[in-house]
Amino acid sequence: MTLSYKARRRWSLVILLIGLPVYIVASVSILNALGRPPLVVEFFVYVLLGVLWALPFRFVFRGIGKPDLDQEAK
Image 1 (cartoon, rainbow, N blue to C red):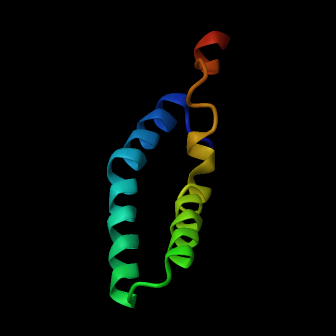
Image 2 (tube, rainbow, N blue to C red):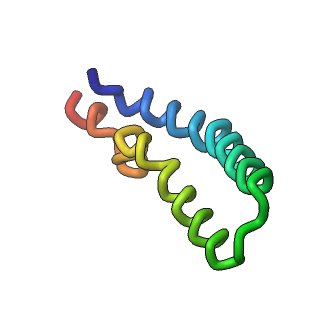
Image 3 (spheres, helix red, strand yellow):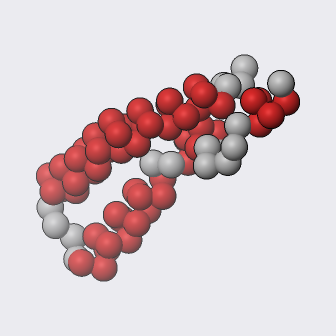
């Protein structure tokens, strides 16, 4: 089942406004609990975590910045 354009826009806002800050706080808390690694390792861990959060949500974010194709077809 595919989400409508409107639903994907709403879900993208929920993910960005609620999910991303929660993910950031969780990532920083876990890294702090494990102890501070060397600066270079810490940088690459944060870069990797910064990319990994978006992978499961690619289908939600795809095409959000473009005009609604569902509206144009009607």
